[in-house]
Image 1: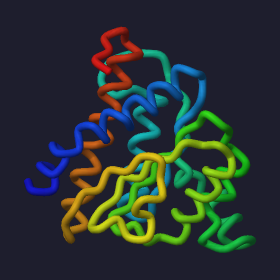
Image 2 (image 1 turned 90 degrees about the horizontal axis):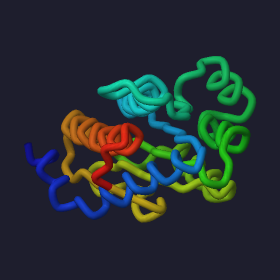
Image 3 (image 1 turned 135 degrees about the horizontal axis):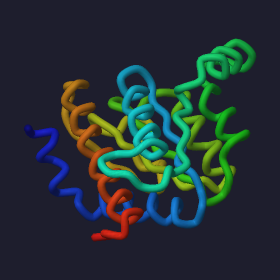
Image 4 (image 1 turned 60 degrees about the horizontal axis):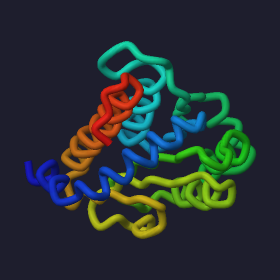
Length: 180
């Protein structure tokens, strides 16, 4: 409960993330997502909800989970190294106006740090959903929401709430029922 309750004090940051995502989608841009392990599952979940649907029927929205294509991941991992698996995809897929959403319970993954650098170089807005103290990624993204605590599973549960809040706002906007 403490991890989820910590989100109540971050309503301004959550609203800013929602607006950033909505503005990008309204402008015809896409959402890119990434994470490792359980956070990769969160990134997949977010992307599929944009392309498919969250709650109700609406237009499909462009999103790509950079964790999804095993052939791309293994090619880049083999040829460039694991630290480049997301940055290389951002170089090929990202464009100014897109948004990169990163999920990390520790904030210390080198491949996510490289993804942030690549996104910045491409003019892609960045959102970091972090845990613990934010690790090496703390303060590096355009928007950051930090879930304090040390239990990975509780941080991931709070990240799930966050992604549902973002999706809920997007659904309101694209169904004509915006509260943003």
